[in-house]
Image 1 (cartoon, helix red, strand yellow):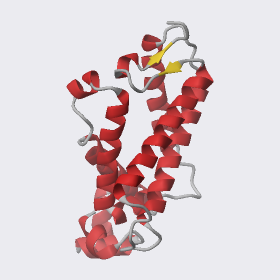
Image 2: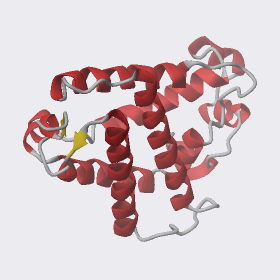
Image 3: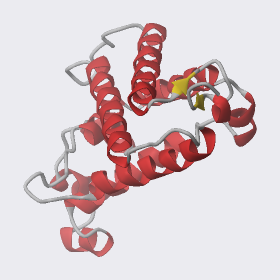
Image 4: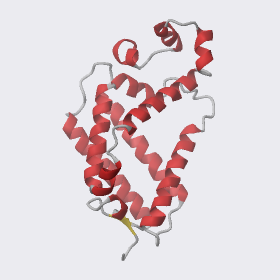
Length: 206
């Protein structure tokens, strides 16, 4: 990942990887099943890096959702800005086998959607949440955020950002808040980002 950001860029090949590591391909395959396996290892590392930037548990409990949203998205944008080649690589699925059926993205979204539904059953017990709706809105939000981050980085390596850093964060906040609000409307819940996380969703007339 370090070499990707400084020398190789986002459009590297498997030959670039083994050359950078100074190993033979048979050695590479002792650690990874193939290009797709390496791709997901990089995705996991990016996700771990981003998770480490998420506010601590006390902050999640004590800060309004609007404030948490700004904190999380500010950290995310800073990471994207500092690692453009890696982010492009991940967003464009450089090593993923498009011809093969890879169910990991679907499984990851389904798992996250199930957690959202479980929380909403506690926060808004009178609201019935359809799993398909939760997955749809989560997919839409993740796709939108990924797409605009790719756009913000610019078309070429080393390109200037297409929008000032602070302005981009403001637009992302609007995107995320609007997406969550539409999800709440779709399931018949009330969403108030100015409340604490556990109280941000509620059933109507509660």
